[in-house]
Amino acid sequence: MTTTSPTPGAPPSPKKRPEEEFRVPYSPRISLTAAIPAMDELDRYRYWGSVLVAIGMVLVVFVLQVVLVLPVKHLRDQQVAFEGFRYDLANGTAPVGQIGPDDLAIAPGTPVALLNVPGLGLENEVVFAGTTSDVTASGPGLRRDAVLPGQAGASVIVGRSSAFGAPFGGLLALQIGDTITATTGQGTSTYTVTDVRRGGDPLPEAMPAGSGRLTLVSTHAPIPYFSGSVVRVDASLTSEPFVTPNQVVANATLSAEEQTLAGDPSAVPWLVLALIGVLATAVLAVLGVHYWGRWQAWLVGFPILLLLATTASVQAMILLPNTL
Image (cartoon, rainbow, N blue to C red; front, top):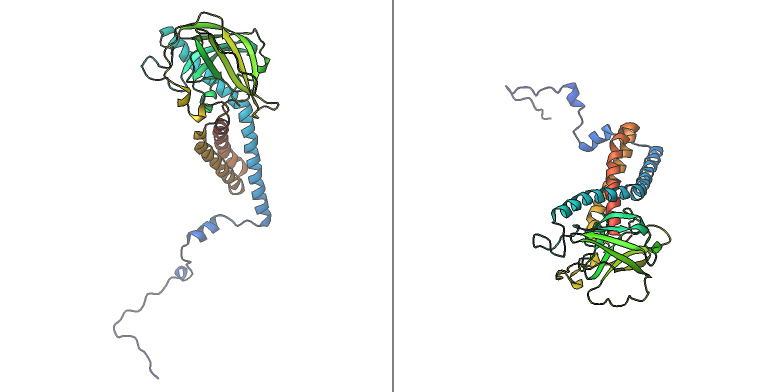
């Protein structure tokens, strides 16, 4: 039988300390498990129930945003645009055609006119250039291929019937003979309503040379915020027409987003990001309630949810038709 003896002169192996003998190797998963207690079956049911409650709260906030906050956004956009356009009128720099004072095409969203429609309760409603859903969120939009109000030719203004203040929500209430006035960089013009048309009704007669017509376009549905039939109100120019510059934008050059009942797909990425943020914040808020505290979690999470829900509601309405 062979025995092994320690090598003469070799130092003895160091003795392990007691705590080292029982040390568990570091693992992120083990550390995370130790930091966050495991949930039993009842806790899991409560957790997912709280997630559903949070999502339901977000949906309620979304509806409140559409009904209450978006009209406030419209009012603010109108106030800001009115102050800027009034300054342009006073300084003689307001647009008088499709080309601005800088010899460039007017950018979409540029204020071009003030609209007064007593039958709709509109007073100094700012009209913007362009008819995309993003533009009509701030106020009625003038088709870029149309002449300005007061000029000879067809002027077409598109507005919303339900969301963002619903400036054109009562087009069907207008009567033949009602008066409409519009103010541009050339002055104030007067129109008289001659017809109220729904989709499928006969087109108006051709305009005589040198005359002008204003058409207000929106939709009407039995239930607000639902897409319905197109409504058009035609009004003939009764004041002296202003000088009409040459047209540089034709119907063929308009994008699909500028047509009636069109939405703006550029809102899709922002809507997706906002919804992902809403869902992630709701889940984290519920986790915070379970592991941090109810008041602490909602005090931090609710303002973030409110901001994301506001963003989602605005982008969702921009994605929908520009007349809604």
